[in-house]
Length: 421
Image (cartoon, rainbow, N blue to C red; front, side):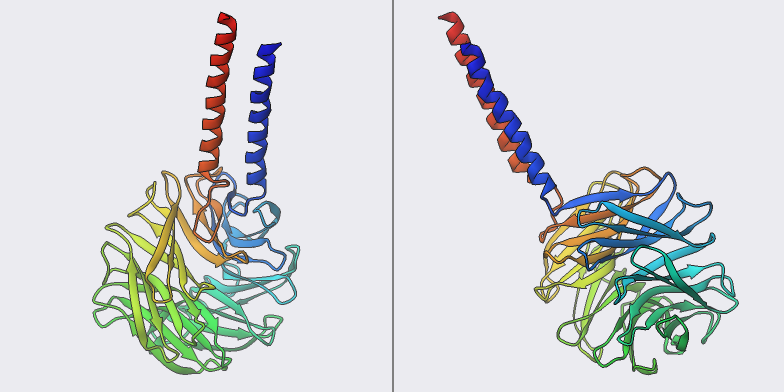
């Protein structure tokens, strides 16, 4: 009876410890989830939805015969609520917005338009059903990379066109009404921007586009184009060195200027490094910073954070556990690194999109080869404000295990002493 009296408290403590761990995990706002099948699936864009969940768009080979757009809606903990594919084979989604009415609009490219590949705009209701879709393009390759919903309820899409404009390829901006009917379009190849990767609507009703342009040495530089509300060019700026530099993401900053991020081989420490450029409202550079190591490091997404700093996400080969890993870098308002975190396994993992969440943390979306069921899967990672993703603090587990171990040792000693007596 004495032996049982000594063992019972230990059993109760162990059960209490595991219930505490489960409770911490269940209430946690930091987690990761994979979605996909047995082949290739890649998340390209993420938004936090008005209900506190997430919508993630990209493309899938696992769920269709060829390749289609894939949109996944989750709850606040990343549990899938629904998913839908869109297309007839040969469709990719690269950008996504939640619309004013709680639905979605995604932009990408389709083989089933008027040309080779065309811009594709798909309007979706809140449960994933297509409301309408529109294609825009010519006889050659045209691809939309970015979308915003405009203040009048319409949409603006940007990317590149080989069907129109000057030269073999130009950046292309299309403005539509709320039903996707084209109101106007502009190309900016004659100004040098051959590819628009990111688009924002500015406070004056115009637009700003970031991408790449041919440099004097025949390679590429960052390019920033500012237009008025009708898409007419106001000014253009380039930033770069003697080698290849490409902007992937653009934000309008709280001081009225802009910030661009992408990759550079002209500056930094490695093969490619992440490069963050901050400008004033007229595109004049105020400062710039590089982030990276000796290998390939690249940023694909940028946000201005609530503390007026910045967070950028992409991939790193210089740091982390695998070949390439998710990489999240947090800076202050002047681009000085505050902290950085990597996420991934032994294979290739790449973060394509980033949002700052309503609780001050971050959500990253991309593709993983290290985890999941297929060759590549959608990977959604939710962190706290410092980029941490464990579901509960490791020191809690260690403390509980040490305490349980100590109690077991003490119990054995008391049992041995009681037996000897």
